[in-house]
Length: 56
Ligand SMILES: [Zn+2]
Image (cartoon, rainbow, N blue to C red; front, side, top):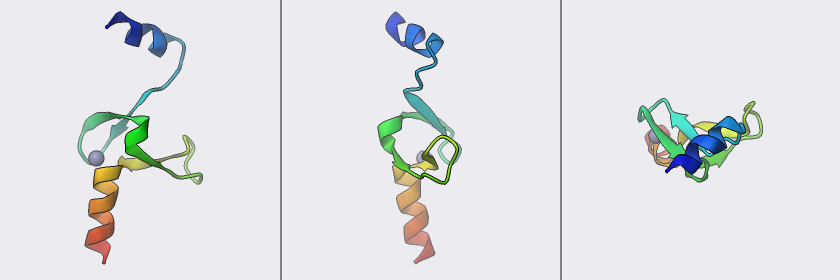
């Protein structure tokens, strides 16, 4: 609804783009990474888990 647009104008980020899925997800779908500028992992939890499994 229109409320989403007003939140964006306030600069309140509620979603983040996952470059792996090429899709937007809520910030809750990303793990925290203090090393990153935005404090979140660049990939969503699903991609992060998939990458971790592949590494093992
Ligand atoms: Zn993803």
